[in-house]
Image 1 (cartoon, one colour):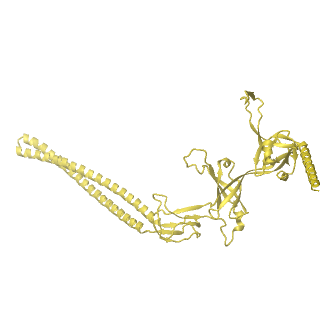
Image 2 (image 1 turned 90 degrees about the horizontal axis):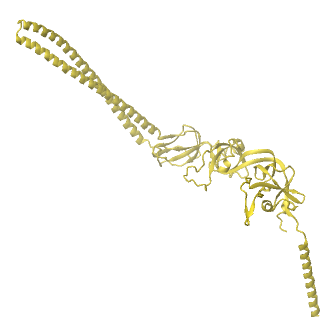
Image 3 (image 1 turned 120 degrees about the horizontal axis):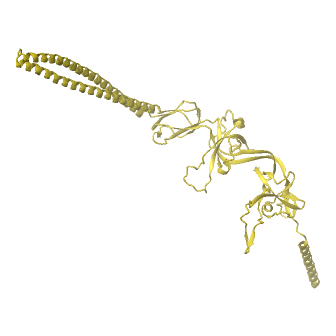
Length: 473
């Protein structure tokens, strides 16, 4: 009995083996089907070319306020978040030392003015001395004329023996004495003229000293005024970095201490970094869709109003090209796009420093013939003018045609045709076809591995639904 059961088991095993062999032989003899692909018809649609970037939200106008003078903050009149108006007093730096400097400057100015007054008095004295010396010269010249006339008469009288030798010698002596006095008076007059000119120059120098002292005093008073810090414009205190009692460093010789920032939160912007490859496509006035991380699922609108002319890292001395080069693009947020967020308890929905991402619409093509972006691939051109030498493929250098070109594959019955295309703009899902494809043609859109590498002109295909391409059999 046991032997009969074993024989049956062997029989069943033999039949199973024969069935397996037959099934394998049947499958091996089946002709393999073509490449499974999915297709989509070329159609007309609107394509928006977008440049995506990320950045931060900032006020369009934000002023950093630093103290012009150094010292201790003795009064602080605002807190962070306060609204301020232009000209409002924000803080005061200890003015005592600057008040003392002003008082010393006033004293120095008064002293210099007194020196000017003394110098002007010296001019008057020198002028009086000059007039006196001139009068002496005139008087002596008159005396000389009279004495010379007398001496000329005495010559005739002495010759005729009417006067004695003593009288003649006396008249001659008087004439010479007066001539000597005239020379002395002229020398004295020249000396007084030199003294007058020196006094005039002294007054001019003193007047320059007065102007210098007045300028120094004006600067001192300006520094004294700067101890009181005013709001340069109206806005919100968006940042406050100091407390009352702290010391601040003035900006006379260095950057100075940043005390606070005043921003206009009614007009906000987004600053984003755009790569050098994309920035040339961005233009002033381009519309922008803005997403702020703080408002999930909400999109705001804006417009490009400023594009940087220099890269953000242009100050670097490194001349290598291995670093990313970005340009700052400023986008004004349209107030109407967040009007509903403004309320009595939420006047300013955006805060400086919020993270944001943008999509800049650089170009829109209406009714453009398009295909899915994954349908376009590249192929290398077959070089018909190349030749083989010693087993190596040698290209003919006279062939200057492009070695790589863009193509799509068009399904025709159970085969594909490779079509060379010229493309235009593209968005996230579609790309414009300028030539090479007609509307309604079935374009191969998957699988990507077949499109990019495997498919060739005339390959057999099997069209399936796109979702069926990636099902596991």
